[in-house]
Amino acid sequence: LEVFIKVMNELQGYFPKQGYIADFEYQLDRAGKLESFKKAFQDESGTAWDTDREFIATTKRKPFLKAYAKEFGYTEDQAATTIDTLRREYRVSIDGFSERVKAYIDKQAPGFRLNFFVDEVGQFIGNNASRMLNLQTVAESLAAKCNGQAWIFVTSQASLEGLIGNF
Image 1: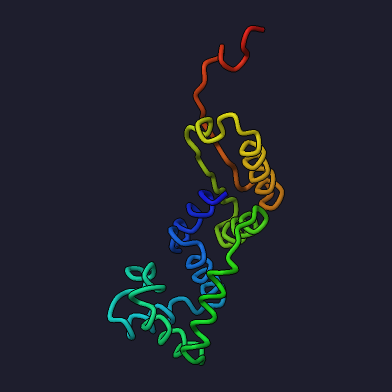
Image 2 (image 1 turned 180 degrees about the vertical axis):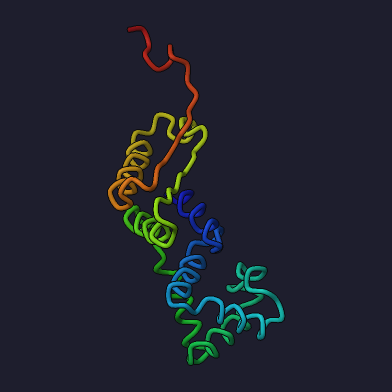
């Protein structure tokens, strides 16, 4: 699930390395505030948001807090609480992922399809049945929420003898 979410974040231009930052960007984007926030961040830091967003917890924390406070009318302490809460409470779920995919598809032209391609899924699943069940649940959730407009295609290599044994 986390890999699917990273791919979806990257597709939408959100930060794929840290889910809570991507979720922050997604929320701002839905509210129509992402571009104005990016400009406020650049004004405060002198660098582009897309370049330095991974450093908002360390070297770029102060410019982030100033930009967020300025953009949304908070104090820097309130801005710090907001981002710390987002980081602490960030969770991934199959339903949440499927809803994000559906929202993305709904913004596209009629007839749009979104396909996820996963190579060598057999190496990931191995003998772990719960991983297979997780992948199946992701696929079923996408099918149900996206009305067949999102698909998962997988490849896997295994010898036929290894699959059927001595039958």
